Length: 459
Image 1 (tube, one colour):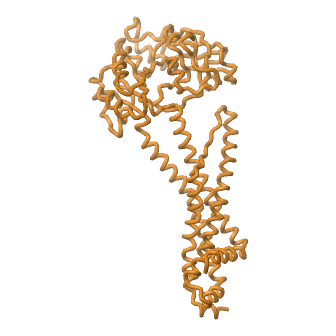
Image 2: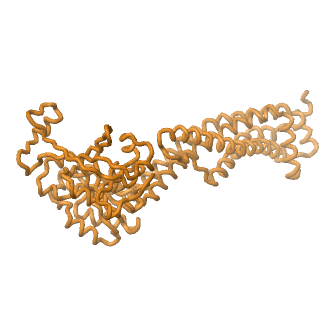
Image 3: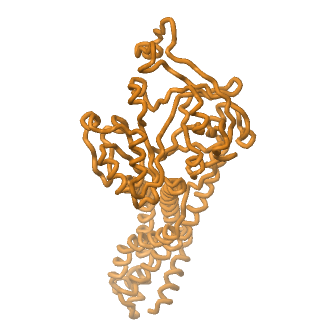
């Protein structure tokens, strides 16, 4: 039999049993649609995270922790881990300006940014919010790490400028980022009679939280009026970014403030000499290729580091596991669909028992009979695969639109939660055909083994 004869015979047999063919194909459509949508969601999440890291250029940043700062057993380049921080901290030099100058001289280092944050209360009218304001240079504010919803970065000519996140803006009662640019807000800094200052007593600080305040509070406030230069989208990323705050203040404005630099509670009990050092420093590299060499040089001094580039393998592994989990859910539906194909093909063998006997009696070989059944199951897989990826694509677009419509009311920008690479379309269709052919294997072999004499005698 020619190939065209096999195709014609297979399609003709399927058309004779329209309802059964439709129900069997529907099972494949549901299974492929579920698998296609699940994998597209996983790829969409992976693309969103990777694109955000790439857009923010986070693969070029290294975070350096000073003595006794950061995770106890942080990860170094390519999986190296350090010992307990209590054993290494005494021999580690302070992360001060002189050390930053040495880091800046390392090959591949473009810039070094110390992290300077201080507690403050942001106020506008009767609305206020406590936060840790971060001192950010104009160059860093304009580096692309900040995604502006309105306005833009400040410059050296803006001595009293401030950048706030959209979440801070909502807490202050402002809903329109464009209208907020240029408005004045109040920053109330918090100071404390710290170590080396007259009258400092750690017990007063503890009493502020236990309710035993005594006659006086250890805290004081000083208010400053600043102008909103830009409204930024909240970062929401991890330690690799040098920007980890909802409020950014220019160094010119911060230098004139009475404030308490505070990265963590341990800073409250440091000596004046220790307060001259930084708890955390971010390094921006010329390119991600220098991550290993710069990290090794910094860790040779005893500091702990973190870089997203070092964690990319773990990130990829997490995405692979997520894809496998999502694919397993879709495979359950495909397993049910394959049982439906087996049932359809077995029923077709029994119903066409005499027809198969006649075909073999007039010269049809076993391979010809097998091909007919293989073409029938393959046709079901092809049709189910095409309709499945189309249904999955349309369903994903609908879900994406509904989710974005709901999140838009909460101020979250539009996001594509699904990604449909070409290989996913082709692989899904090919997988549907492969599953269908595998399901039709047993019925095809059974039909090919039909004894023509018994089949012709069958009533």
